[in-house]
Amino acid sequence: MGSEGNSGALQSLRGNVLLRFIPLCSLGFAIVTGGLESAGRGLCPVRGIRGEAGSEGGGRGSRPGGVCGRVGMWCRGRERHAGSSRALCGPALLLVLVFQGLPSVYSSIHQDPNGLKVVGSTNLPVKVYVRLNHNSPRILCVTNRLRNLEMIDPIFQWHGPGGHLVTENSSVKITPTGTLLFRNFKHEMSGVYTCSLVFKPTTEQEGKSYLMKYIIYAFSDPSFYYEFTVRYHSTSCNNIHNISFGKNLLRGLSKLVSELTCEVSLRKSECHHVKMQRGGMQNEIFFTFTVSSLDAEKSKSACQNTLCDVSRRLRKAKDLIEHYFSQQVEVIGKRKGLLPETYYIEGTLQLVWVKHCLPGYGINALLHPDCPNCCGR
Figure 1 (cartoon, rainbow, N blue to C red):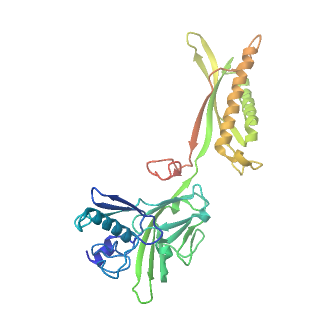
Figure 2: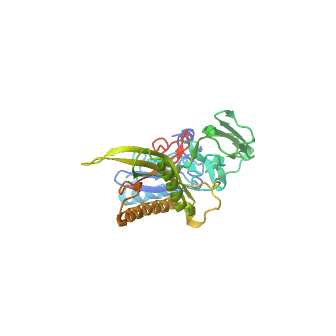
Figure 3: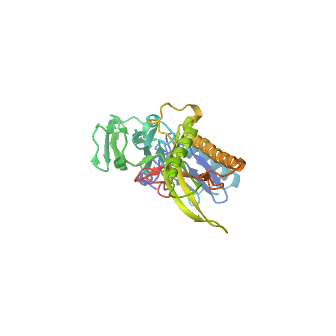
């Protein structure tokens, strides 16, 4: 295989790359796995294949290192053990398989985007998830290998869904070193972005060019809330006290969860005539409430410590509400004489955990497997 063919077909093994060698002796394979960056060098000075040192043939004076040294030592060891110079390691039997990794995925879901840096790849597009109305991570116009190289007269050019990106405007910033940063990311900024890099390794060499592709998605965090329904017995659906009773019930439930920085809202209230099993007709009021976390802007005081966890606070609110209605059952059971006009019907409380996305966004693990709990478009 010529050096030119090797340069185009194989990837460089230099840089900060973790390599793993798995010799499969029975098959005569040396499998090399790892995340590899694109470049234009050969793989091994073994049996005439170009190596990292740039020498051909692996002859005298060349020094195989890295992958080459390890594969060579393994082959020589197998040769001595087998007593044959071609056992397992002859040109017809030695196969080196290079497995490329899947597309890289970066997101600012659980990290500070200002401290996260994204490197590109010339092989596969890199996915980047940016929280809606927040700054993006720093998206670099280099691969992991190119970050460690000296570049002479580098030229960086970014293109997005709308065409060429200018150096800086109100929503986009491109640094002199080619780093792309979005400010206050909007959903219309989502799309495919490419960066072209041209530079000279030395003043005497020709310029080299690289093209990196990024797929950038906007996402938002889902809001969580509980929806619960309860049923109350009423003397009549036309009773004027039904409205005031609903308001008082809402006021009491809201006060119950206020210390958790949560709020209760009345979604709907309906009165129906219900035919009882093996019994007569009775009037029942169907209440539907939601209990949700107050936004930081709406709450008068900032929550502290673990109370800032939305899920934790909502679970505590759920426990308080369940205890509230179980107490009502106990009070009615101990009551002597006539029952009140309106009272809670035991066993009718039902609570459902709900995830909610902004309009136009949805949770789709098939469309966004790398961000299965995100509200994406």
